[in-house]
Image (cartoon, rainbow, N blue to C red; front, side, top):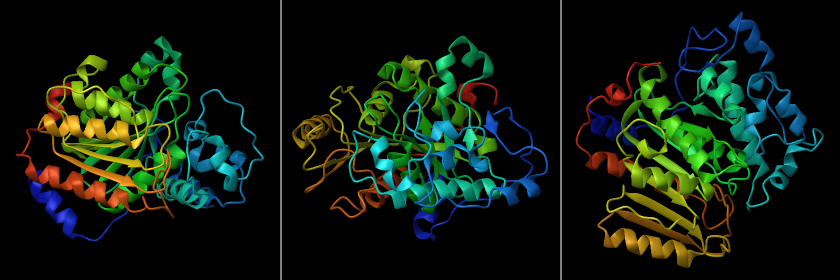
Length: 358
């Protein structure tokens, strides 16, 4: 089946939550996955507990479902957390963000608990051990996988945080839940924080390369992939959209079929840009709508397909925007992405572009 036909089938199908994997019992696979060890059935029983609003940050860090990567779920690298802080106060960890809904955050974390209970791989390394030894900051990176339908296109999500922290709890995992419900595969990138935007964008290039290289074992289609970014993450996504992965240390790969860009002041443009969905809050004082609208106008002058939304009364870093005028934007963005895939000719298998599979 062609990618276009697959997407048409997805758009007409009911939402799904992903496929079941089997045989994931080694500590790490060649593709970099962190997986359950030993007797999976026994481990699954110990992972059954869902997180609750009255649970604490310490309960995340000590949860058996997240044992190999728990600290990477949280926003700050090398940060000393208050283990007693209740999850209903999770928004205090994200100073540049508004409209943080603890219910949404905890629900997204519990989706990963459910996946781990089923023996599914939740987290993947994007760098080899040798690469991490050469640059230890790469230990603060990886991909969280939220499965849609096997063989569906994938999205990679780069949360924001001013390159000081990574707001996966608010702008990553909740997006991935909604995208995967609609049948697409979604990855959330944990990139290096507290460093330059160039390092973070190199991590995004490495993540895209990892998915292309391991697409068959991951069960995703490389044709028609999309990149999603909020605030600082939108700067990273826009840079890859403009220049591709090559200038950021990756192999030369096809550019994404669509960019989903939220509330950023990024202004650089290339002569040709991928179709772009743009959204911003009308009350955003960090990435004001006027800045976003200049970018939209420039994209349209260059012939780029653009869909633009401004949401009244909403500030910066609104995430899913639950309870605001922005609520529902993600459904519009997924529809936009699907339309761009429909417009594309079928692609050759892009795995050959990144060499031997991992």
